[in-house]
Image 1: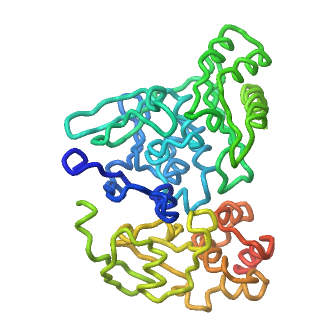
Image 2: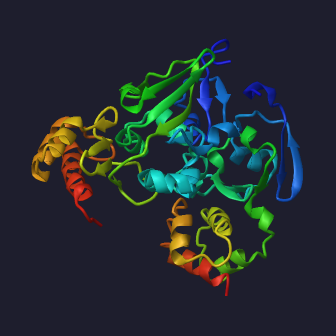
Image 3: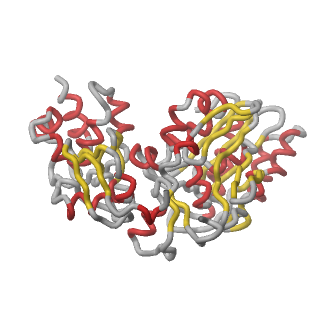
Length: 253
Length: 150
């Protein structure tokens, strides 16, 4: 259908799509409803990797013993999205496909080196999460492809997640960060650039023994925050540096 | 199974079977208020921020302003009317001042119903984090839910 009757907008939990629809800002008029495709809701271990179906809701992620054991920072991110009503409908695939720079699961998937599994009529292809976004709200997904799942290899190191918004629930992030602390640190930040930022230079410096202060300086070079309705560039820079120090600390609140 | 194949939406509304000829993309909120005549479900923000339009689908709280009618097909939908008026939570909200202007109250009560019996204060705060109230300051709402079990 996507190939022969397109373009169609895939729809699932509708927690983003219906906001645009209700406000009359949605330009598309034709949709492909995925919500009932329970096969895309499976969370399992496949060939050693954690496989999460694109239609897994945030509530599914919070409750999944596999996610909590393998990728606790994803359960943490999911529990800070919206309120329970949004968590019950919004999906991981939708959060990724919506491609907002403020999407709370995006830094987690970036830091986790997740693979995005795309399926079209002809074939399945696997795209590293770090190559999935090509610009502001732009992805490599072709109009005839669906995101069907995410694959995450086992992770060594302490997983940390922190979102900073105006209040605990129902807030879109001013800064959102996921860190895997350990011998080979991995750092990803959202809401500070047109797409989620994987801070590879900062990671490399930390792996080579750089101090936290040095890492903070490098990280601020890797982000490009703006002033917008939710925050200012200056606030975002300060919070980003502070979050890095906090999430790298052996024990932190 | 494509979007276009749905012309009727069938669901169980407050225990009674409904079959409606509505557009599959019509908001469940509007289906309930306009096609079913149940105006207890309120529209607040229309963008999933306020929770005023909360209803239960198969016992799970959702924002009905963000649910297409097609997604209600084959489900059990519970609105505030489905509680009947003498539900322990409804009585407690009256007795303990959990409602002032009342716009957020149906959503608050349905979100509380989904918490099951005797939720902790923490569970109440998490369960109602998606429901905004501009009158009460929340403490009367939390107290109403806690006292509803006494």
